[in-house]
Amino acid sequence: MTQHPVTPMRFTLGKARLHGDLCVPPDAVGLVVFVHGSGSSRHSPRNQSVAHYFNGLGLATLLFDLLTADEQAIDEITRQLRFDIPLLSQRLSGVVDQLGNEADLRELRIGLFGASTGAAAALITAASRPADIAAVVSRGGRVDLADQSLARVKAASLFLVGSRDLEVLELNREAAARLQCVHQLQVVPGATHLFEEHGTLEQVAQLAGDWFVRHLV
Image 1 (tube, rainbow, N blue to C red):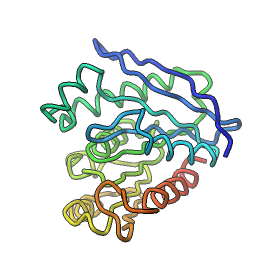
Image 2: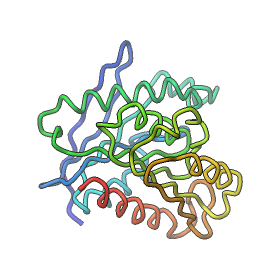
Image 3: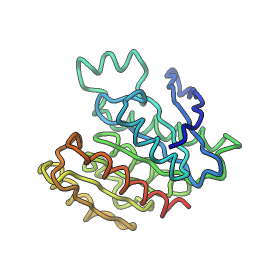
């Protein structure tokens, strides 16, 4: 599969400077923004491999860090910031707003690919930016943490959960029942929370990629 060039990006939000990696294949048909969950970053090989798969489908991708380097170091010890959903969704909304100022990207419809607590931030941002966000995919997401925003989400939403991730599966079922947009809950057989079992992450990439192509093009 062709490797497309990656452009480093910087987003200044208040005192925070966030770093991202943007990849835009020729004739891109949409833009997927990755919203990492607990303790993950734009350098994660798993996130990069999914992004690479999306690029092959003609989707532009932005992998960026929701936390600054200092905040990530604190979060590794306290694990508090990854559960600060208002902070994460505020940062994500700020990044989405800044992407709207990029002339090369303005025509691309945006999808959000959230994992763990990042999925809650993705849904809250989708609810607050209905004109900007066309699709959301949650991978093992704590979508229950977007509680107050679920009924206001307009973006087509796909919840992907491992069949062996029983607690999160139940939380996803309850959250999906409150959505009033186009939505689907898909269970990935044999997968646990992190989709580390053989072939399960590839399955996630295919299901998510199909969803984004369908709703962003």
